[in-house]
Length: 199
Image 1 (cartoon, rainbow, N blue to C red):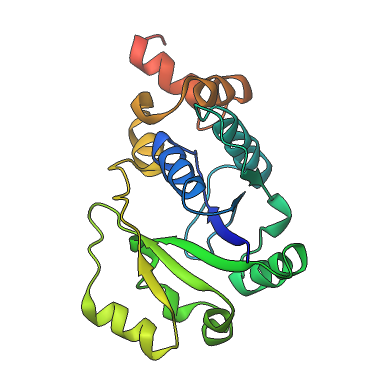
Image 2 (image 1 turned 180 degrees about the vertical axis):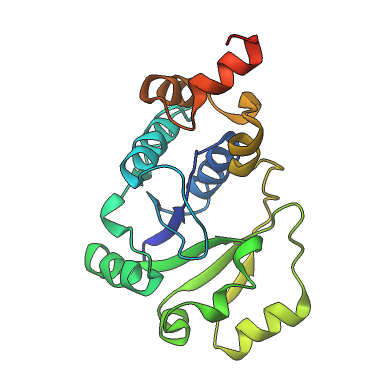
């Protein structure tokens, strides 16, 4: 059976941390389906089409190239259950694994029709710095019927929030940085002027 990793991310903007996770997944699954998503529990600064375009660039920049990763923007939905229903049409015989960061585990029980969702996918949790996995929280998921595995990868200590708040480009690939500049996202021009003290 073909193993499919489903990795939706708000990617606002996508970072080297996202890239490391996607690369790792490509070494453990037959196919990695990636898309930019709107998390109903977060506010987003950037339109979805820009975040999807940046994810496409991020995947293209993985070196050496991996040929089992695809941007599947058609899977994007605020309701993960709808995403999974679309994925089942694309991969009717696929074994679907939903990839989530440990920071989302406490939100999961509040997701739309979560028990229906957990019947149709396995869960793989990527540990993230600052979001330790508690036995109590995992217990809640097991009670909901979840089949949960913890990834052996530790998510890099990188977040999109750090870029949005501090305009620190350390964790952006050059291609993403160029895209942000070209499209004038995140008020980057203003930030650069401030850095150079141009009024």
